[in-house]
Length: 312
Image 1 (spheres, rainbow, N blue to C red):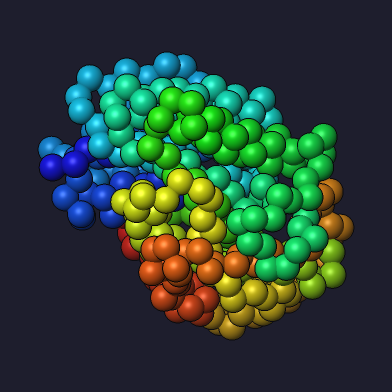
Image 2 (tube, rainbow, N blue to C red):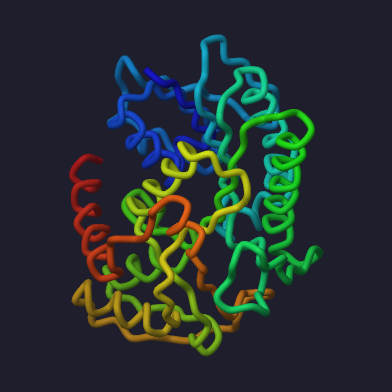
């Protein structure tokens, strides 16, 4: 039975990954300091093959048993969190990644870094291939997250080249699904919350800036495929179907049956104008591409809200 360590495993993505790994017959050790994660995300996973370790990854972590995979997802990931926790975001990208890589080195485990499309900044290339180096403002308010992930990628490749650690890097594009926090500041949970409350949907700027939204099940499938491959260089995982935020707001209103109107507010500093993954490498190396369309994914997310409310 393989053993996987998932740092940040009580967060939105991490909890879905833990669940998928358990379904594949893995023993899962979930490590999380609960700064942005929640025990409610993993309460249904408790069992003999699932262990929760409350721990801050900026501090050395000790795992006594053999480990086959280390999935390093620990980090604040939404603007509302990393703007609130700038130093912690930088530390988990540096010290936290160093500690996770050190664990993988000692255990001779396959290591996967959850990086982000934010390493591309406000891109000058469209769509974004992995060979594009990005256009990032290192001293802007978003720089704490962008540069933490860029540094984590450099650290991962240094461990691979110098220490021989078996590493992989995934660049994750916008992902959504059940267990997202309603107030985490990202577009889909914000729009869905506002629509369900019959409140105006807040669109920043003109709303013509674009994003590409991947349903969480597709994303997790890509993470596992990459971890179980032999690839070391970065791979984009995201849905290449691009839409404007205004189109997204209109879609959420339609799916929820809301009577909400759309209002416009000032655009945040350094907000990317375009975001679309080139997933050629994912298709060629992993045979991966998304299977869940946006409206289907939004319906699944909407249905989960009722289940979560009943469970609460």
